[in-house]
Length: 142
Image 1 (cartoon, rainbow, N blue to C red):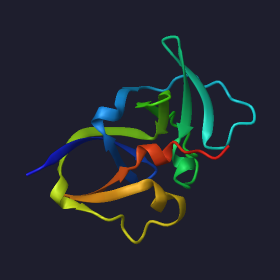
Image 2 (image 1 turned 60 degrees about the vertical axis):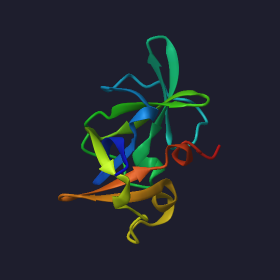
Image 3 (image 1 turned 30 degrees about the vertical axis):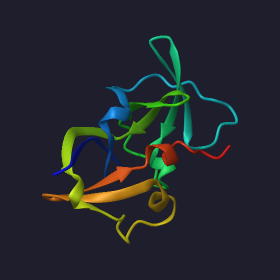
Image 4 (image 1 turned 135 degrees about the horizontal axis):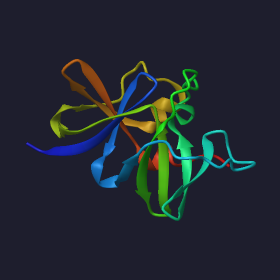
């Protein structure tokens, strides 16, 4: 049986995960400096112990409504070939080990941009875990 570990988090009501090996760290809300003329998905820049990191709003990237409840987002900092990027998410889940044999195509109910960014899904007890295609999520149009 082949398994992999996914770091999980929520964007609106979506339960999402990315391979744990891509995650540098998970941190609380950081002050964001706006980046003029950046695409709407890019909320700005954060200073992570002296390293400037792009903060990408995962809700906006998935085509979901902005959070109107005012709770500050959490940062899932991921490693890329070009450095670190922070996904802004609503809340953090756990690291889950999933059986790769339970991997399924993205659900038909996913539409638009979200469908392009989800690799597939895992049916868990009482939840549907959507695996985010990290590289595609980072392809923000300028």
